[in-house]
Image 1 (cartoon, rainbow, N blue to C red):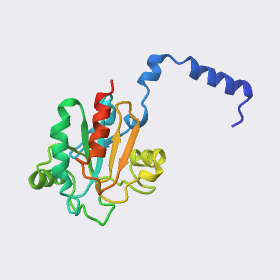
Image 2: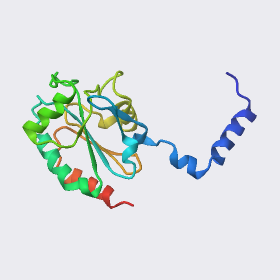
Image 3: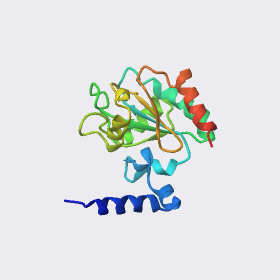
Image 4: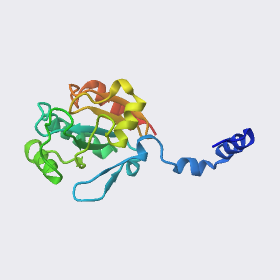
Length: 186
């Protein structure tokens, strides 16, 4: 396709002339993505626009699975202040998520008291990764999941604030402070 200089300038002018309302309604960053829920439906990150979102890839048979209880403590501490917590079960690291669907959330609830949102088991690394994880990898190539329980903090505006590796405890000062900063914005 050959575009003339006039076509390019006209297209750019159209972008500049877009109304602020249209730009505000356009999906931005993480808010452009959603995850399948066990049993059907979607968990759309856009539904949490204006709130910080912590997205964590989980696995019930991982040595870090105890973090599900610590994530619950974090959830209990910050959900009333607006934080959203999304568990994204994955079998990508060591085949440590043998369960499927709602059985994953139920196992996490029984073993660790987890009451936050769980989505369907999802691929989080490589070319077959869920679009959210491909976007996050492009945004922060040095902060990609290298094991289960990698944590991504999404800002109120949908921007990727940071990535926290598996060994980072959910109640670590650096993660708690980052969440606190996002909760104070606005």
